[in-house]
Amino acid sequence: MNRIRNLREDMDLRQIDVARATGIDQKTLSNYETGKTNPDSYALIQLADFFGVSIDYLVGRTDNNLLHAQEMKKMLSKIQKDIEELKMSL
Image 1 (cartoon, rainbow, N blue to C red):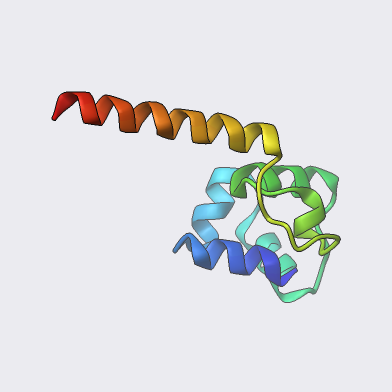
Image 2 (image 1 turned 60 degrees about the vertical axis):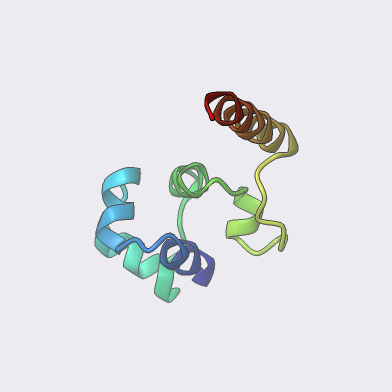
């Protein structure tokens, strides 16, 4: 489960930060990252939601770590709206 560690480190977070945000014990999270144990379905859902990736990405079934296309579209629309608002305020 190195993807969990990679995602956490990419966000400059400590294990305790992810643990607090997801409700997963820090030691349990450490075990996931080292491969000592595997996350159950609840933990996978919590981690996928927290990092904004699919469960398939977390478990290595895909290399695509992007959010669902619909979610990405919403995010891009919000960014575009924010840019337009900034332009108007200048």
